[in-house]
Amino acid sequence: MVIALLANHYVTQLNRQAQMLEIMKGVEADLLSIVQVASERLAVEPCRLEQEKSLLTLLQRDDPYWEPEVSASLNTGFDDQAVPSVLRMPLRFWPVTSWQAATSSEGSFALDRAQYSLLNFVFESAEVVNLSIEDLRQKRAELSHLAIGGEITAAQRRDAISLLADISSQEALMATMVREAREAIVSFADFQTDAMVSEFEFDANAASLGVQEMISTGREIYGECLRAGEYEPMIKLYERLLGEEIDRSFLEDAADEGTE
Image (cartoon, rainbow, N blue to C red; front, top):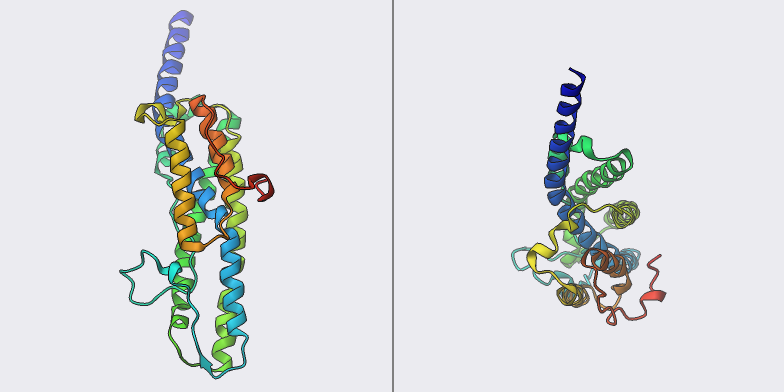
């Protein structure tokens, strides 16, 4: 009887381990996606501050007529919008469905407590980030009238400044959360599946070219304010998973760009 119970327990553990490995393929692929969008978000953080300070300076003028000064590059790729955006930051949703599936499966019992806690923190942060994105999208839309010239009252300027302050505060809090979540992922030492990087013929050269393209695209939109060094943690994670060194010579002055 005891032997039968032990055998059944052993089989159950094996099944859970197999389920966990299968589930972790999706979870770890999502972790890599989050590291990418988080790095993009942190790379353009200085650009956010530039945009907000510039808009605040305009709003503080004592002038009954509003004359918008919107950078054309900030609306690159926004041809489907009728009104230009006066503020722009990446608003990419973080994937959460893989972890939701994992926590509803017995396979999650095969994760140790530290792994589970770390992953749960990351994906809880993802839920908060996604809610913030929806809220920020709406608040930025409420400032879209500032892309059009016309008469403006002192009260309207004050209202716009108040909304801008709300947006700025929310963006700053999000940046902190994004950084903490990315650091947690990078510190996740026990990737079970290598996040399938090898299955898609993803190598060091492809990783380097991909990051270079992200930086180039970001600078076309936001300008030289983009902090390329924020992609360093992502490159280090790729190196760990691939077991190869990745060229990062394009990360100009990365050590001085505040990646700590």
